[in-house]
Amino acid sequence: MAGDRDLIGVPSATGRWGCLQVTDIESGSRKFLYVGLLDWSGERPPTAENTASAKTLDSALSRMEMFSEGGLQVFDNRPVIGIQSNRTEFAVGTVHRVKGWKAAIGAAEARADA
Image 1: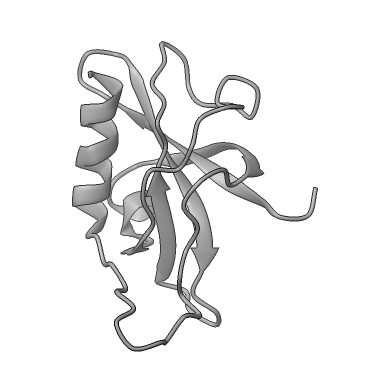
Image 2: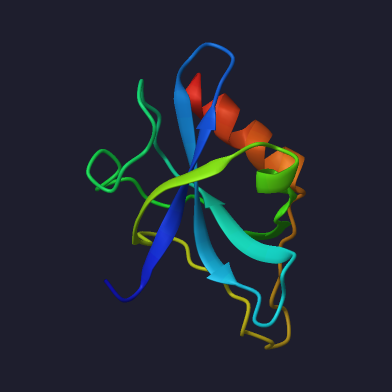
């Protein structure tokens, strides 16, 4: 379905799951993507069905190393609900957030265990 974005499962040390969602892709880049923390946790990896009403809490530029070095994987995809990327906004006062890939994973792990 058009507009669907990847759901990235983040396992915590306790066996629960958190989720990051791709909110935008940096055009032409092979290293950068925008990810948001989903307001969701579960006992199984994230799917479009079990995250259906979960909103994106934030969106920040991050890096692909969450896959290559962090070992994360995409489990499903669905539309973004909540905060989207503001990558194309450049008005005075616009804030573009950056979150390292380890910080993004840490936030999803904390949400899984909350």
